[in-house]
Length: 234
Image 1 (cartoon, rainbow, N blue to C red):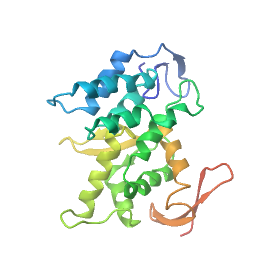
Image 2: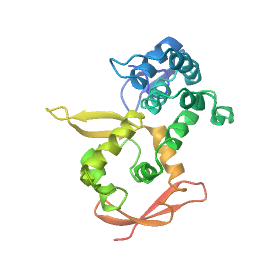
Image 3: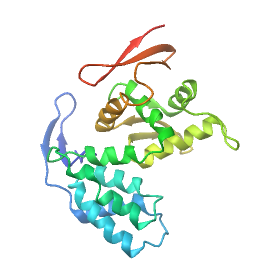
Image 4: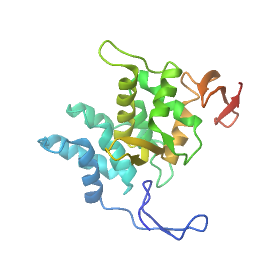
């Protein structure tokens, strides 16, 4: 039993007979520690003004661990007060949402991605939910589809490593598996992150485009319900 990454739930039993009971929300102080661990480096001096704003941001997490980690990861390399205020006062918080919805948090994290990384994120929608994904395989697929390429100082695979790490720090990935040397081998995508990837894939370069995946060329289409439909072409 334990806490879901999406919210505080108690899971009892084994699949497919697991029963789920909702627990009380995690405290703001606990969420602050999760946020803090992502937003600041281990030995970093934490500016007082950012700590104050950060604690206000944490209140928007509604006790959900994934929200706290995602927001902390979003602000990890941002040290300007106005950048933190932009998150705290973003209009996304005022949109209608379910009581325990964390989609505003995930959308904020996505919208703060560099534009060139957005196709890489949207591409993750082609994998089924709860699928174990090989990290190296995903990077190779990004390369095969032209989403990433080498730079003057980095090989394409190294660029892909950086993209993967960026997504990891934003808490898009979970259930990380490593080898005996501590190197990441595989991971899964959070279900709600997968939903977001499907949503944004209709608005970036994947829409109505033939892409390469799993030794096949596939065509990604938008359905009437704004889901992603994949056809294997060859």
